[in-house]
Length: 404
Image (tube, rainbow, N blue to C red; front, side):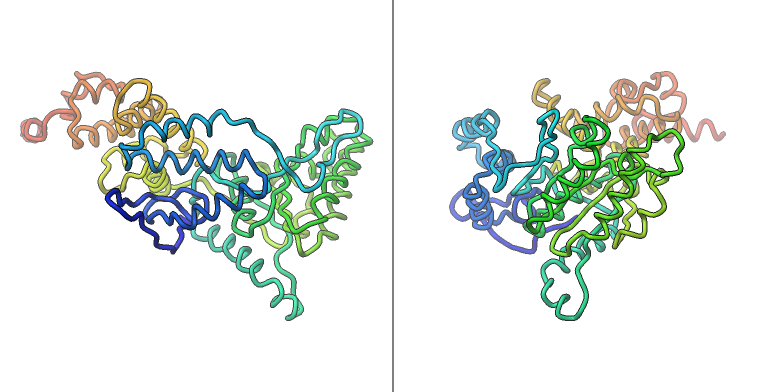
């Protein structure tokens, strides 16, 4: 987990420690630097990015609410404004549009606000932090006759953090991020697709920025694919030319879920290729703990949910957390229980061995046999016969009797 080293504390009778990560993102385990948050909020507001201000305000308000019951009414009013305020996009230059449809070809975020702090394997974190370090010392690199990393290719299954990584890089390097709108670029006469792509790239080149080409395999598919028309094959040539000519003051990030579809000539054009794997159970548990603000060692539900989310992506985990939060509010139950119920509903299709292990952990956490049955879908008779869901004393007695 990427965390800030800054140490700030709220002063006064309501002194508290709110978990907010570096600059504008939320992370657990570090105190809230209110001065840094205030400066960052002002900077985004002065840049005219109203939607980013609203998003950042929602994040801070959600973190403050549990610690300041006396501010319940003003916090609710402020949150309502943050939720309903109109979005006004501000950009230094008009965004390029498709000449036929008049649709914008690219989306722009001038001040990136993340909904949560990313969590990646150590190898991915190290590579991304190296890119940020290079950008902070560009002049030194150039004086030494080398250029900072210009282009990155992110590979991996959906939902593992490739797009989030591009936005994180933009935030950490304090650059705007331009995201190609694939539908607009290709939703025109085929002869215009290459022209649209060049227009987007030229627009991003004019200033230090991050350009994200998501679903890159749709643009750079193998030219040997006989099912593709000639115009789409020519796009690969355009991309190769643009990758070779990309300026070192910018950062080009391409992301794909299907690396095997890419044209072989594209691969060697990137300065670095990062493979994003699916999260491990421990990484899922850490994500749950960080986003919910619950230390993993103190939350019995964390290990149970992580067990049920085997083979899930970070996107799946975030969706589960959001559903659990909604359920907790609407049904008036503890977030811990709502999280368990949501995870167990997904885990009904899990192998019986996994559900039995979940049942055992639920019993150890003090849940009744009825609730264990409801959550896992395992019949109470089956639980009784196996000793799962019974009190520890009864379970031991049954195992001894079975052994005799």
